[in-house]
Amino acid sequence: MATYTQIIYHIVFSTKNRERCLTHDRREDLFRYIWGILKNNQSHLYRINGVEDHLHILSSLHPTVYLADLVKDIKIGSSKRMKESGAFPRFTHWQDGSAAFTHSITDKDRLIEYIKNQEEHHRVKPFIEELMRLIQEARIEFDPRFLA
Image (cartoon, rainbow, N blue to C red):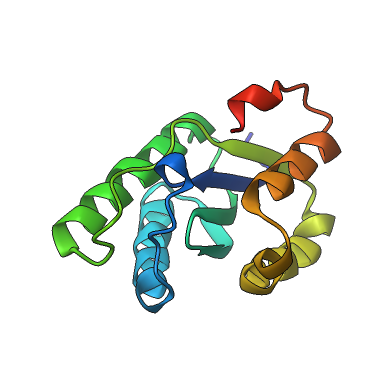
């Protein structure tokens, strides 16, 4: 029997100390590069977007791919690429850790729109508030000291 899965992951991670270094003019190149990493991991990208200090990725994962390994590949690969290209001169590295939430396929369109509108969303809401809300909605216990 074949393996069938349909799990969508909403992955969120930030730059070290939430440094606002991911300038708008070069983000598309970064997103395309991360899309390539997802393809190489047999994962399907539904949407990627972000602002100066963090990214959101909506993706399915191939059953043989571990979430932690995928996030590690994305962070290592994109960090290397950004440093070599000089596209984001103030970027040093990604923050340790990440947040990832599973969703049903029925949530896909809503999440795509949410991720698509990150620029507008963050005109009024800081990243830390957004992250706390996402964690609380997922009913994950957390210590707010580790979000600062």
